[in-house]
Length: 283
Image (cartoon, rainbow, N blue to C red; front, side):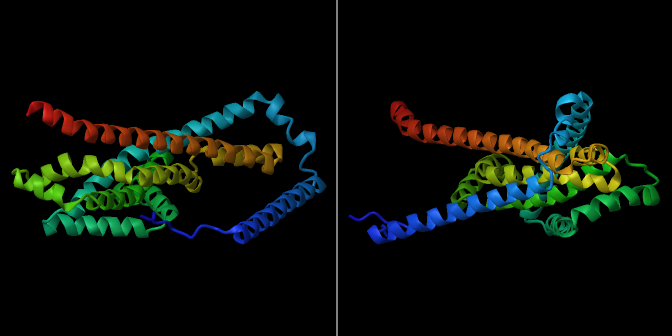
């Protein structure tokens, strides 16, 4: 019996063409990198004076560390609140009662459609005028991130719940569970494994979106780096360092998601393997 494949096995000529194309692409990439390095060298971007502040000014790292802590603080608050809001909105969208479903749909569609930058600025400016409540830059940023990402997470949760086979719902309802118990006890725990990659991706987006706090004067990592650049006059080097910090954090989150997903998969596989044995032992 033949094994289905997504593409035909390459022959000798096809393999040679792929090899030649790969070598040409690699050569073009190396050439572009060399040209970029040469252009940077011509503009004096490799002069030692541009890198000396990273070695002889410890206050620089104190400033960046403070900005990083502000970024992580805003992201942590927004992540927890957005996750809770997303679950509530997802349950509302999945509800069979129209007076719960329609408001949830309206909230999700509204906050998904509003640009996040405009939402953060609007919250920061409108609360003192409309409600006589002065919000700090952190509070306004967290609230904006929560509303926007909560709407996105609601759709992720809803898609994960709808991906569960209908037999799960039918079996739970046949056992006498209410629809709320079905969502909370049966569907949501299983949907977590399905939506975990999308949730991690949204967390990465949320972390990067904290940089939009510059519009209301929030001292996050990117804004702090911009202030330091005005003094040291080495924008390329500073922003490369900040980019490496963001890449390191987001890469760690991706590795964590991969580890959690693999652990959950092993747990499910072990449970499925042991279940028949345990049933047979009872019988």
